[in-house]
Image 1 (cartoon, rainbow, N blue to C red):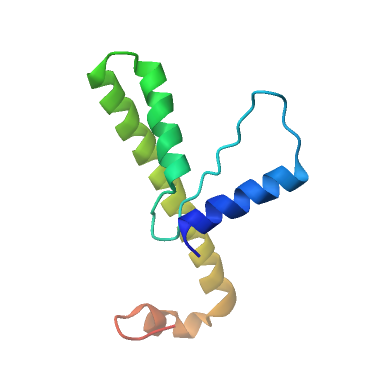
Image 2: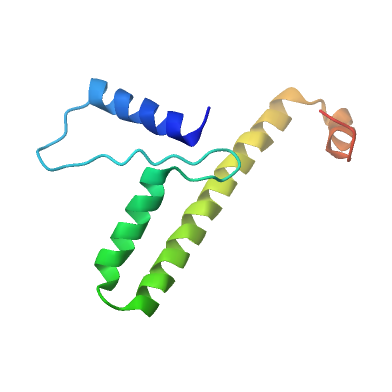
Length: 106
């Protein structure tokens, strides 16, 4: 599935299951397992940082960099936690070193 598909799926899900107050816009924030962001996520971060920075380009660049770093790190940690849980539940501890070795496979 692509990030575009993920955005579509989230939009359909939220439209079907939730009613939001007038003027509220839900942003389908999607990041794939490789860290690629959906266009809606990128656009939201960009516009939020522009509003916060006003005409200050240096502040805008700082805010965008900080947001991207923070969100990307949180995403990477989340992926790592899921992988760790899979390893703990699916790989026998005696086989872990072999599974982690280059070419060992899981």
